[in-house]
Length: 120
Length: 110
Image 1 (cartoon, helix red, strand yellow):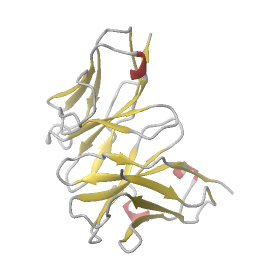
Image 2 (cartoon, rainbow over the protein chains, first blue to last red):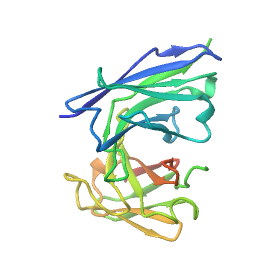
Image 3 (cartoon, rainbow over the protein chains, first blue to last red):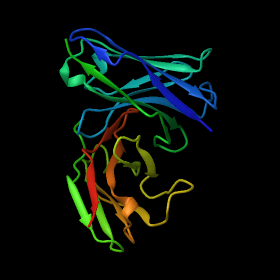
């Protein structure tokens, strides 16, 4: 059974960089059948797509976040990562990683999510 | 790229049918039949319920159905059950490999 698990600091200071890693188990991140995505949800609010990456390294980002977002993949560790720079309190959210099949446009497996709070 | 518009809340009695709307623009919902719907119980990760507008993943009840008309997609839950009480989020492909979500709808079973 495929599992995704987010990890990283739960507290980040304003103006610093948020860094999260998603570890994939039960399946290979190098499959050509999937993209791998990041989504966030501020407390009490809706979901926001942050960006996605293919195993070969090709990335796509939300235009509103693009200048601050870096997504990378490490196929040797079956992981992909998110870096979000110059964070503010508005970036406080639960961050999810998810699998995105190329054949069906959707997010079919999700991690449990991790809360990141931006505060000094 | 603006968020899709969903009603904040929808309610219904057990056994009834409810419909949740998801309104976008001609650049997202209106241009592609690529809307997906997610169910999210409190404190849990979202679960895929509908993809590509009207298709159900294996294991999802046929009480859930999706449709689209113009710039508005809809999710209908028929035979409403207590376990359906949750938040529901729509998501549309918006071109250039980007995606946009709605603000989410809280479904209450009366």
